[in-house]
View 1 (cartoon, rainbow, N blue to C red):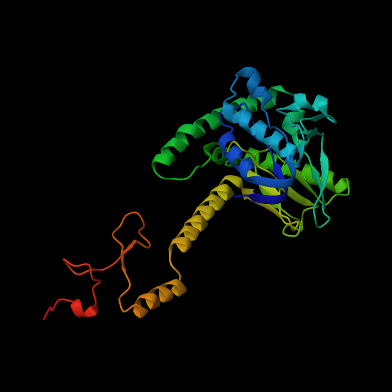
View 2 (view 1 turned 180 degrees about the vertical axis):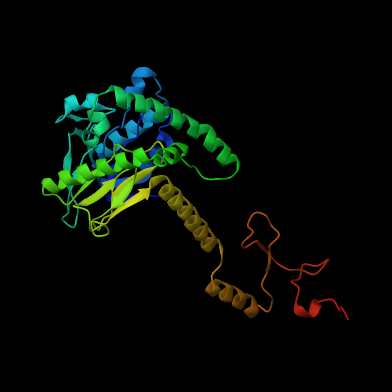
Length: 328
């Protein structure tokens, strides 16, 4: 199973946090094939690691898969965010084939030019200083911690994953106003640069708003979302189309489809064709007998069964229609 795209944008993984959905991201990266992969900031949460160390093997596997993609020909571009801002001192450098840049301009196959940036520099709260955003991060982490027992109960009830923290966050009017201001500032910056749109992360709010659908906007606006409350990614298909996907759901859908196709192939291989059945019956007809019957009770092959001759009790001669018992 392979998921093939021209370009993939992923942001806000926050490796080092307990809430980071590293296993889901690993599954996506395992099946992913693309020409260019953008890591749009906050890949590693250095703020969180400074206060409490948490680095399981699943987080290592994410980094190894990113390096593997670079090794096998994918152009991997890392744009540091505010939670991994220490990496900004290495802007312009390359590590393991991964390019570190402050921002980038991506050109889609159909010629649109998009500003790609984490976006924290347009966040008024972040620009006000470190104390306020760090206090906000602590409150956010408490909400994320509540996600685990909340979803454990949902799982027992057979319900899908849902983010409690996201529901609380978007019910607050101030949060909605903050998001709106953030988006407007980013679109204005892209417009002033003469670009067609912007791809960002930072606010953990996935969005897909091309100007063709929202003509009141200055430019296209896309937000990758995050891998703490969800599993979203912005992808560019091989024909240049952009789409915001739930990567975990896409992986599961393709896995189920691959299993179904494998089952169908196995069934088709085991089931004799009509031509084979006709030829099989003709051979026995010319020999003056009747073809063997299929024993469909055999558990070894419930589709075809074991082919064995039908004989009359106590004899070795194949049974014929004349041998049928008189049931009158």
